[in-house]
Length: 359
Image (cartoon, rainbow, N blue to C red; front, side, top):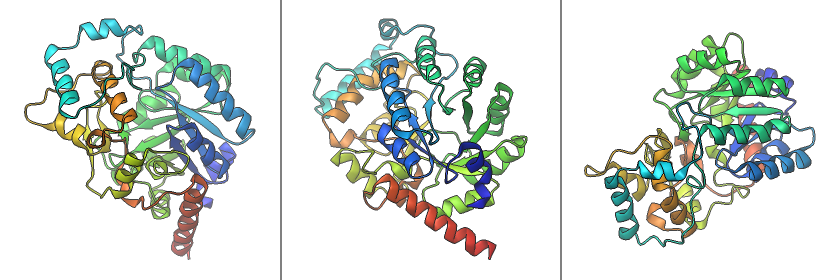
């Protein structure tokens, strides 16, 4: 894919494909298959990040890789769960308790991924300190591009990749010092905005000032990669295509839902984190969309409100409530493959399509 040479030459990858995964093994698999594996570690403790980054360095050697952290503005200064819990509205607490009862979710007394600690300035600085100690090749910032974080990363020689959902976000990231922009269309899974990928990518390319741009959102096949290049992108950022992979190791319940999902089986909801989040539709999202449901709280209050229950839903596989952050490209998942097989299919189809176009 010669149209992606700027990414390939700058990162040292074989393909201009950034592969995002919440599982460390997924990111490692992408880098081994010629892409740039990005580990989404924002819900991990500093000690866990230390262990994960050390493993990536040891297993990948000189291959390109990175981590993704979420550092949103407006978070509390300290990791103080008790303080957040005191501010939770009683009606919201009762609503969550009623969901536990209706769906018979076992209370194992353990927190979930979102409630093990509070998303705070303290948390962000502690996580970033671990990452910076390792002088990682790439730091991706999924929500927010604070100047203090960008400056620290640049001092350690890391490239900054900023995910943006609007042209205005791109301008903010550029002012902060971003090296590469990811134009993340509303089609994408996880935290996403309202602008479609085909509209957003050209606008971000125009605003980028010559910086490389990756297309994200609905990029799940080689045809999508070719389309992204035609829109002016230098490469792509892919997450949903790897959700059902062997390395991602989804639970049996979640795997069945991923493979059965149709094109309209994702929804955007604030019920998970307090910010807009595209995910598989389930009884969870339906409950929060009901007329008598309370409005989700802002981050990090929503995290603490639902975190324990959601963790128990996933651990005990309470099927109606099980869901996952997923983009509209989930419709293209038809079976379970290894990351290497997925990468081969993506690259092969993209090269075929691009060759046909150039011919």
